[in-house]
Picture 1: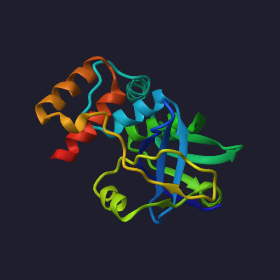
Picture 2: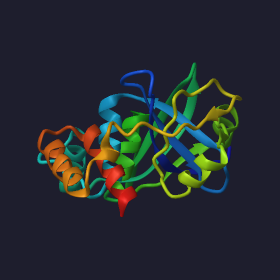
Picture 3: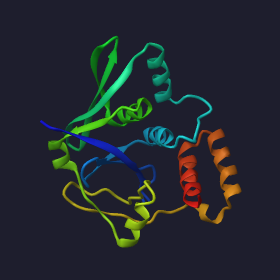
Picture 4: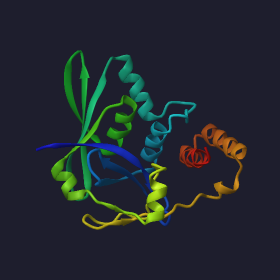
Length: 209
């Protein structure tokens, strides 16, 4: 079976369902997206890894694993999403230490959070992408915005084979704040370890720059 390399397009969150997140993966050589439902903690951890400028005051669980692996010279070489059963994705992490490779089973959200921290590539099998991959349907206005912003707002992810409408996301009132006020709110969010809010603030600041 042939492998397809994926890249992270962004993390979406529902405007109608509190606490519902989806990680959007995009095939590197194609237009299909692979949406994976993830938990709030994992969404935070992935967002922190994506937003290089946000530095937690204490290491998150995935950061701790990275520090532990570095200390014992363990390297993550690759993450593979290898199975899809009843809507649940299964992944494996390929690690290497002293030129010996080991394959470790992991939740997909954890595997990707670690792949980001190790700079490891993410793959899936073509059969999985054929089954679960979708094309996101854009309006011309939303497509223009999407080309300049990797953060995708998706209100809901439909079942396989259907399209997903992209909606312009809520800003939680951040558009009304000045850059100085946004930076102050960002500092407070990081200090309070509210990384979900910090990621949204970082997105708003990035749009202004």
